[in-house]
Length: 617
Image 1 (spheres, rainbow, N blue to C red):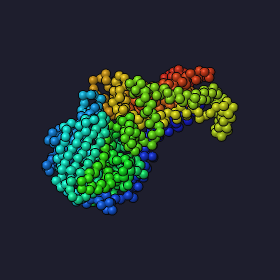
Image 2 (image 1 turned 90 degrees about the vertical axis):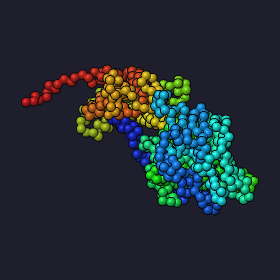
Image 3 (image 1 turned 180 degrees about the vertical axis):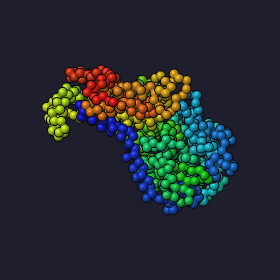
Image 4 (image 1 turned 120 degrees about the horizontal axis):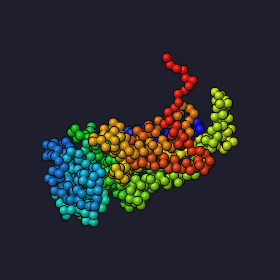
């Protein structure tokens, strides 16, 4: 049985390595490869970060409009920052009112810069403030989407100071709003903005040439964020600039990564551009929310990720620049783009990819390299959630289904373990017979295994099977917004957060808030108990060191998982419980004594003093 115990130690060590070390050996090299590849692709951009068309396309010489000069949030050039409500109230706006969104579009500048998520709050309480996604210039953290045209010899183009005229005061699903601006030089601009019942805006820009000469214009779309936001800094989660750009596929740049890119065109702008791209999107993502500019999926464009310095503030921007539109006198040019601004709901993202044909839009959610495990895990949890109405129950049911699925493998494993227990006397006799001759001892053991048809490594399988399941569930709990603030029963109000109770204040019985020095709630303790019982199903290893390791391992895991999401701890406790029941049934069927109670009594029984031990002084 010693070999079996050793194998289990190795399996558990592998589990920890996968959970805590995979990002160091896999994700970090991946980020470095992206950085090296980016250094080989230098291209020029306009001063505010939107890439210029190539000279052969008749590119504009003027920068793209939309970037407010001066310090972020500057009001009238004073550099003052005002409350969000005050900034919004001062500007003429079109109200946004949908089942999922609230906010407004600024008529001065035509930006979508005021978006709140109606169905998401900062805490588990519905009374807490709603999540604010986009905010206008003049606030502490400007963050907005913008669309328009660049070109030359076309007269004044709509910019950040342009005041548009709207044909309605409210934008709702099914009722688009048309914004109009006449530049006084022969061009009339119209912007038809529509929104669905979720998080997608459709922006159709039209320009009518009433002048006497043709003009060349290029449509653009961008997402701009002023100031570096606070990120969680986990390799298992990407936060920052993201996009799918043609043959280069998924591109993920952290804010720090972008700061290491080469300068582009001037002394303050760094970044990366991709030319001749078709399909995909560019945007900025947080853990649960994102904003992304989505170009015409059938037309080529140039995409860019940039960082520039505006005063003392970093400005991060993702943008797309479409191909030239030559607008003859009397003609009208159009460009249709979209803006996603909302929560990264899995089913919503997938529906946009399918129904709108957005290439690989599902990669907006960071499923990671093991997406072939994490995606099916989420689909299973989501299915049972809609069946039972509780993600905690869904975790229990999925765990049970996985137990049934892997039942043949587990049965063989436990049967092999039972056979090893049955030959424990013979194994002990072999160790005694050959003493320190490890080679002969091992040969005799192998002959015994062969004779009794025992697989000495079979005991690893129940633990090894848990590794991908554990990681997949951890990833799903960590990245999917569906798990955010998802309750279980009792005191578990958020499966994606640690158990809020604490042993230090006796789980709330003592009248003080427990410090976060040691986070140990009820469910981690339950998990530790189930792990302890599972280990006591087997006889103690003959090696005293191994015996001590297995005695303290449940305690170590209890403290280690104390700060993990409650859903993961519940899964582990439930899986341990099912494993104990399964192992008990199989051992009884194989006629092997279940040593649980004997081992438990032996653990807590006081050992008698050794009579042969020398008496001290």
